[in-house]
Length: 60
Image 1 (tube, one colour):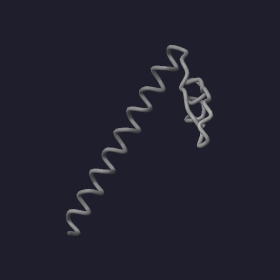
Image 2 (cartoon, one colour):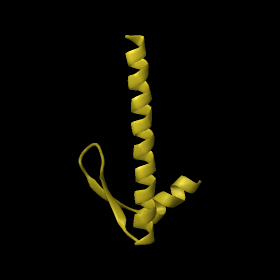
Image 3 (cartoon, helix red, strand yellow):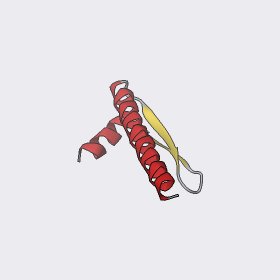
Image 4 (cartoon, one colour):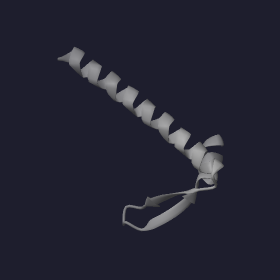
């Protein structure tokens, strides 16, 4: 059972890493096109964030 848990942990780690890479690429592409992301807070209030602003945050 421990080996299976370790394999699941490795798989989860790889999936998360892939998601981070994909999101980073998406932010870069949207920033090139001067686009925004649409998010919602825990209360469901919608807000917009420019992709360029996300890039600036990531660089800091």
